[in-house]
Length: 341
Image (cartoon, rainbow, N blue to C red):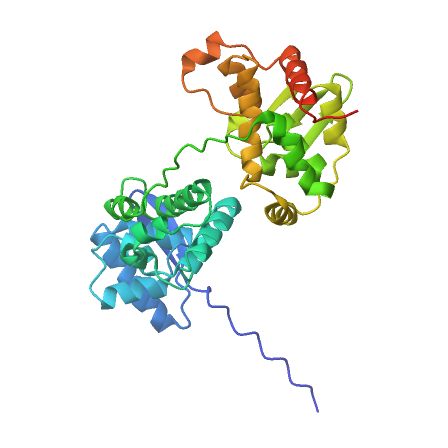
């Protein structure tokens, strides 16, 4: 008795393809049909798109941004002639997030989570959010808000296009967070006493004061060059924040010997220990004030702090942060109880 030959595998759903000349070029794409009958039905819809010049649907199918299910639903609803943007606006935010670069994905997720907006909501539903109330009760920094808004703008640009009216209409509802300047009025002679309350974290806080680094920069990639003491900072915000600048020898030793641990834990311990409401970012303000008190020109301070120049002219009229600036700043803080031998 002979053995039964194995049954051939069932063909995949992408067996059927459409091959057309569309707008002067050859387009070959899968119809993802389960049968020849379904394949022919989808070809009828495709031919309609070609004859009526609805090329945006074809491009979306070709790029994998839209499915045949989306197309057939739009046909049944009589929405083929509407802009394809309506398709993206109906989709949940969670489905659109993977189209963003990973950094923008993280920022948008954190922003929406802080606003308690679920990712299951359609993109168009954001237009109904009480944005003015959201920004009025925002508990994080203005930078966090604006990073989230920028990520939303990037998502809308990728899906709708930069000039699309729906993109402009939605972004017009989401206000830009305007931060008021924060003046830190702690006398510099008292900084060492204040930081002493941090105990084990005191070296970290001293490093923030004397280097002017952002917290993300200190916990990121900071390279200490010992031969000619200098810090090389990977940066966290703009191209200007990626920089290298000289420091004094004691500053280099301090940064090189830091045991950083978790940034959130350091922030939490500082909130519990601080005698005055001084945030960790305020230590960067103290650094800038010290450099200004020493009479270091604004252009050199900008280069040291990693701020973009306000005008192109400033790039030609100001020199970079010098070793003399670093030594003067180190001596300034040493005279006020920091950077002890």
